[in-house]
Length: 227
Length: 254
Image (cartoon, rainbow over all chains, first blue to last red; front, top):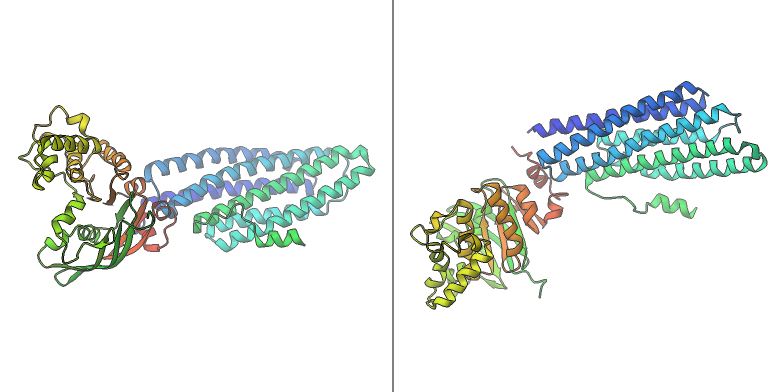
């Protein structure tokens, strides 16, 4: 039996995915801006972020109405609670993309500190995580969501490596501190994006299974810590 | 002691003639808690609670087997008087049913009077205590001698609860007690349950999921005479174990 409620939930999913698409686009532009040294792209990120903010309000509004009017239970309830949380993460991700675009603009106005090696790898990793987190939501795929959780450690180590490299460079060229700081901030914001993708994946697992996997030590994380 | 269930149902089966209404029901109700029984019409919810105070056997050709242990003792034991069981296991029905010819006071006192209590101070005290427990005293204390049926629907239902409480039952069975009431009266009875469970263990049949979620500690889901799932209410309504429970509580049956 198809319920009216299913239709409303379908629309809510669509809204969240449109928002997810905007966030992906914002991250893509921010990363390309740095890689292709294109200031115009950095400027476009802010435009997209405005739309993300509009979606943020609209998704919350829809969720509030569905909770009040449908009084959902079980899987329906878990889905709406998960969407409310994913909505917050996506909005923050839009902000982070803007931060990356700002840092990129500042960086591009100065001399390049060094050839970028790890940062493009980190860009790709994070974009893959975001893609996979949103896909796991669309396909209701628990395995895919768990894969996102496992990827977060790699992003964290890339960030640490970038921090170390930049610090080494700046030690010998103190006049480049500002450029170094821009790269560090970009890496920091990218790492945050990975964290938000992880949150989304955790919410997807909760919506599908009812299991709360937040703050639980993952075998891969433990292995990584010991290696 | 607290871990021992007040009510324990073991392999309970029930029939109407040849038609089986309940299949091997096993569950336990802890003292001082509310258990909600949910399930679609015809799933055996009412039959189940009517087995808990031997009302089921009053229906012609109705039979049952298995055990219903109240405080460890089988209520179907050959030496057990069904009337004594119904005093220990009270019942409130869907539609308020005060005795039409009796006053508010007499409706509440009738159980004790039938049991032979004549002392008027004991009767007065019991009537006041029961009406207070049913959160009705303040509304009726000045019209105790008006007919019970002169009260509003919601008040009449609380009068029936007071009548059931007057004989100090151990368990109170409620069969959709608010389905004929408006939201205000429903809310009053739901609030009342939270207080009442301190003195009497409650088993409530309800078609209203939100009501089951609000008032109960444990929820049991029945389907086609089977107990599909029983567990903590907070679990059943957020992460049910059985897909049939999931489908029912999210309104996907049909």
